[in-house]
Figure (spheres, rainbow, N blue to C red):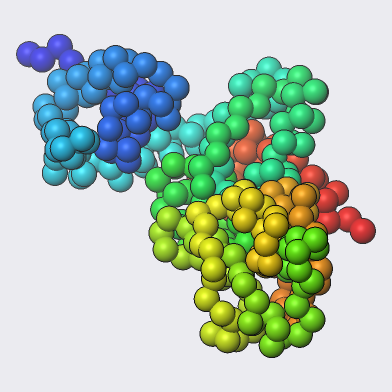
Amino acid sequence: MNKNDFTDLDGKVLRVFLTILEESSVSKAADRLGVTQSAISHTLSKLRQVLGDPLFVRSGQGLTPTERALSLKDPIQTVLDGMRALTDGRPFDPLSEQIDIRIATNDMPREVIFPRLLRDTRAEGARLRLEFIPSGVPDPGLLRSDRCQLMVTPLPPDGPDIYQKRLLESPLMMFYDAGHCTPPNSWQTYCESDHIEVRFSDGRNARAVMRGVDQSQIRAPVVTLPHFNAIPAFVRGSSLISTDTALMRQGPLAGLDCAHLPFECTPVPLYMVWHQRSANDPAHRWLRRRIEAIAADISAP
């Protein structure tokens, strides 16, 4: 009789399985979970013995899941969600618990909201640990797979299991170098200007937040970048302009000159988004309230 049985499986072991499945790599799973590769390999060996399947086979530089591993993804996520639900309604003290959370967001929310959140909560004695992944134009699969527990984005994904809260809104502005150009003063001159555009790894671009105008008239960008932090280096000393939210003045584009758009454009909202599994978790609720308070302060006149 095999001495390994289902009681050898706990939440940490199941989390390792899902992480390897998502990363297709032992080393990447170890980096993400903050443990050694040998610890991940040991856990994978245990899983293979208990489940009676290799689960992952080598393919090039990564791992390919077996059919058995793929079939286990949803049931294991359901088990982990059920284990998490056991803590709903529990007493929660942010000063006595370690609070770890992975957040999907882009440059501006990360730099404007979360440094203050971390400073304030740690000053109070809370043990908060943050990890960030880029959200691009977010996909609900990030939340459903528990690859992140929170999103902050102007483009919230939709779904019956996806919850959202509007945090604030910000007008779009033009960012430029006043020492080398003047900002456009009409729709026509704006369309004819040299633009910078951010395009995410999935091919979608940040201009998706620009609503209420005919973007087909705007000249193709001179420079396309993968994230907002790279914009200032290209704008300085050039005639390039970047169209981004006014909140960028407090974050990645703080060193650039800015001006209002010379045409009407809908302000950009910013949302906090989470999965239903986190809705009643007391630590998650505490964190959401803290983020809402900071967002309200940022958007106050």
